[in-house]
Image 1 (cartoon, rainbow over the protein chains, first blue to last red):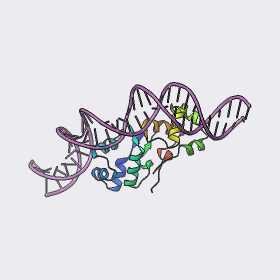
Image 2: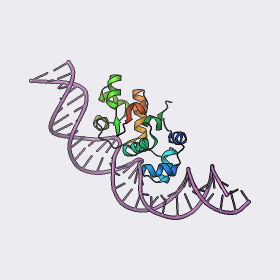
Image 3: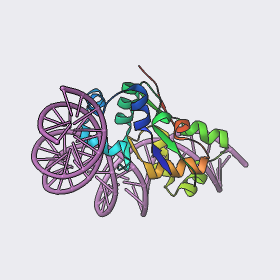
Image 4: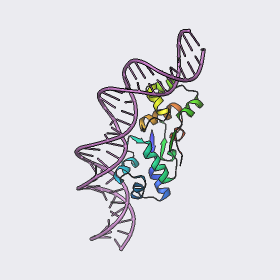
Length: 67
Length: 67
DNA sequence: TATTTTTTTATTGTTTTTCGATAAATTTTT
DNA sequence: AAAAATTTATCGAAAAACAATAAAAAAATA
């Protein structure tokens, strides 16, 4: 099972959805979908932008949980 | 910049492309594309299957390199 | 409580991309 | 040299990203 931890990283960085939205160039509505695990895939370009904006690694945003 | 490290994990597990292909249920041809960084996105279902097959985390397969 | 801000949900449409299936070419191994 | 594994290349179908937008809901704030 894949878990998205975007909310955790945003909290750690004290970054709002709107702020992140502007940094990565994706609308808040669409970022919200990703953040709340409603997305089913991600473009590497988006992952790249997120890692850059949050200064983190993909592993900080996406976690695999076995089950 | 996003870097795919699927080849590294496969080498560590001594797992061939064909073997991994069968485990994750994706044709060798398509896995090859992902492995060689020709893909532009990934489904979480695929990432999930890869992590399971290789017993690793997304961070072991995808790396962000700033530049 | 009322107001404002932020976030979430929903919808439509366009564009992109995955992935299967397949075949051929290339590389590696035996 | 032969076999096996990997890569490259197409085509098509299905899936999904993402924009744009609007509305609803939730959270923060006065």
